[in-house]
Image (tube, rainbow, N blue to C red; front, side):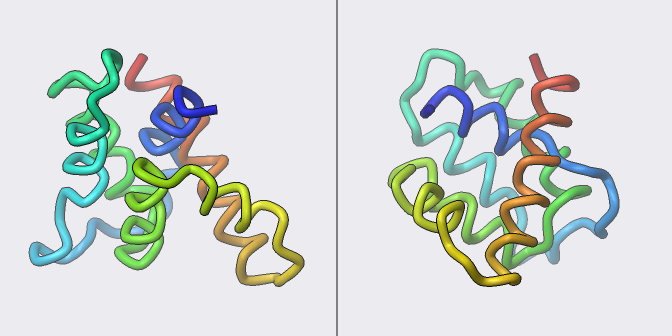
Length: 103
């Protein structure tokens, strides 16, 4: 599950604008801090580029927390709210795209 989260954090649909400078690189920092062997500087940078295109600033802030606490992702996935379902769908799209681009 943790490897999937890393990959998923790298990829999503390329439909949103890049985050503001103050919010930039949240995913990359979380990826690098994860201490996983697959979390190389280049891969985390690639994942951040995908995140900038696929996730809003708020989405990135939420998803970045999942690197240290994957259980939060599971709780969101199991949630019944439409807002959580929409975030989960964006996250899955991001994951698929990151996997395809950053692997």
